[in-house]
Image (cartoon, rainbow, N blue to C red; front, side, top):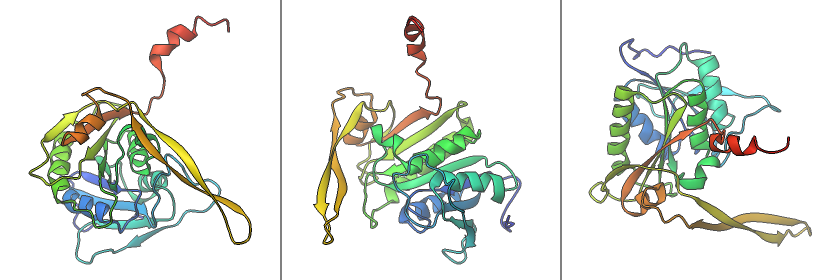
Length: 265
């Protein structure tokens, strides 16, 4: 299944690019453009939008993964996959690539993955999956849901963070969640490394009835941030900074172990 990249050099990093908005989305095309300046790029991304899939994988259906050309003349090798973002990472590492990538980047997502959004995000789940495999990984998101979103300002910060990641590496078990405000390059004040804001969605369902008399529902709601800290991703983004949150896939609440060990169990 492996397709040899004629542009590949043993001296350049091998970079895996994926997303959750689909392989033709403007965000991933921007990310591919930037990654081609750093290394040898393989793209394995969903063949259709897979937003808010979280860490879902396909186990009750077959997966298809096809080599495609989205834009003629570009150096990257690309595959479209019928599965989820996490499926894309799994099949890339286990079936497509001859060796483990030096870096995995996911995005650029159309819309925020800050705060609690990170747990629903297909973009970040792809990055986290790569992290579980020991691959340094970054998920990028722009706070603009439009397919006409302007990614020009994002390029500067993608380059900066990828350069630093390649130079310094990441701690074991850590993945970066990067969110970029919807601002021009001149308006963005810089980068803040921060914590995830303690915020949540207050959700409701819009109940309707079909012409056949069957009830159906649309999920809606409001994002509520009661975290007043100035060290959070939400504060950074609302104040014109790119937010960088180091996240981990070890979900153990280590601080609670001692207390729970006092239970009569």
